[in-house]
Length: 198
Image (cartoon, rainbow, N blue to C red; front, side, top):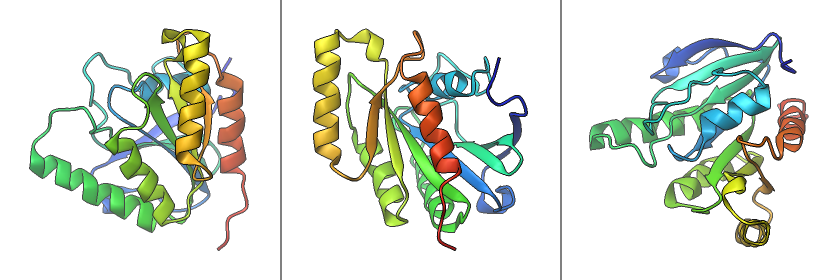
């Protein structure tokens, strides 16, 4: 049973004017197109196909808003790190992301989804920079941890933690065997309920 029985899709936005009302609290999920972002969201919310998964990377090309309960939301951001898109579309994405991070007073935190086998890419660092520019807490999910042996996974986690320092918290995660599910959900709740300066 889902811990978020009221969870539901609200709307997709392709421009700041289409964003939902800036009230309550929301946590954004960002990640390179093939890092397993939709699968991670589905496991954390515990709802199959809540965020649409696809075998074609880059299907999330809009800012997708979901309600979790009352005034708490999850926001699925576009993942253009891998998708083959025209430069015009890529520039639009960059502008849309800048507008989103700079304008949303309800934005309480960000989950950054990173394939543990690739570690931090230029895309990930760009998203971290967006978060840092507005003082946003960031939590990194090192997905597909099941693809590595235990020692390799532990080493990768240590390397990413060392790389990030105090800029983000990090954990192992696997949508396949649900490793790290409880920790990720607890972090989501912590961010949604944190006190933000007005």
